[in-house]
Image (cartoon, rainbow, N blue to C red; front, side, top):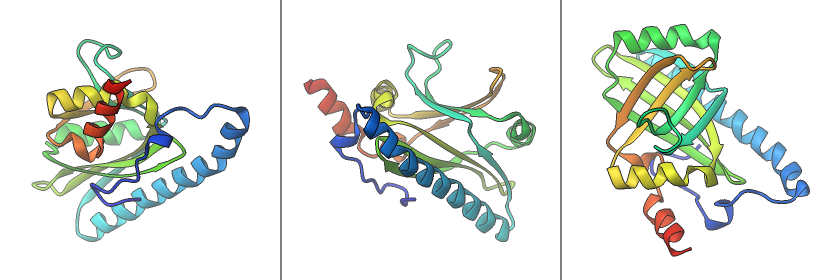
Length: 189
């Protein structure tokens, strides 16, 4: 997993894979990247716990980079679906804490973004770590909106659609380090 701000974005990964052979070839790569993301999240949680923090880890069953036109109301940003067996701990942490700080650790593999979003409440020493992944090419609307609004949002909900929490972030580039270049390339098409 890359450090915040590091990226290995390139234009060749911005579009979906096409052929069945390409898709089949990417499966083990995606499985390895997802496994590494989960290992990284666990290591981050252990490090925080060693420092005295309470941690909640979430392995999103789905993550979507949602533009405003696709979300309910005016919701946009990264939407994580939290599994039922992790929802209560997430909800309790959100109700008890503010989470004014955050960080994002990300890597890319074969057109997918694998990331851990770290939500931090330094006052209570509580952290929520959310592991997710999404197809990069499907993020264009969210990237464009983040750039225009100069902010980003993380949302969490259950599979049945129950809202668990939303978080505003003042640094969208942690999520999309090359947002300006990607939007400029899209506008040239």
